[in-house]
Image 1 (tube, helix red, strand yellow):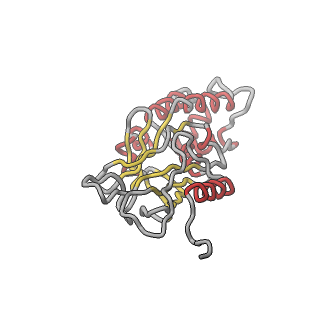
Image 2 (cartoon, rainbow, N blue to C red):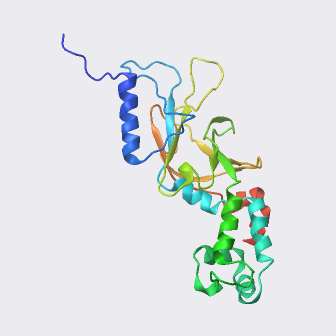
Image 3 (cartoon, rainbow, N blue to C red):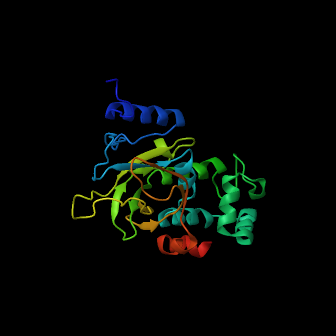
Length: 244
């Protein structure tokens, strides 16, 4: 009898996935490497894993817009020092427009490197905000419709590893083991819900663009964007909500 085809060893399958991930730029958590069960011809009724992949720049773009209440207060302290044209710009355009113009370094704000109406240069203000952000961390938890958490990312921090530009990130999540009485993972074709928990213990549901949106055996869910809805922002950071 010839060599049987269509059956792959665990090491071969894992290596193929790792090679594929390296090619597509996926960074895997060292604390939670990709794990998948052996591929077999007969389907065994037991739990296995799927992957959630945050593609290029997804976490970077999210973190640049993530604002905890402590960060909002820090930025308001800077605004309280505004004078002249900077204060006028803020009063006429509001919080969101002011900081959007600031990060885009638009000329309307009249910042320059030598002197400004705040007493700090543009570069110093930007550096102070970035230093503050370095103390902020968060993780992303995967929950079912009943709010039960079955997987979590590693702790993610501003401007580190996977939150840097052009990086991606992945971690694995379990499917339910039908041979046990307790629900210990996601059911097949069950919708996956994403929640953020920050370093202050605040938790908020995330609005996610992903394909597919449901869990499936040995599959990958590719997440392309994350955000906090206006409704959920009211609970997560009411101070920022009132400013927007």
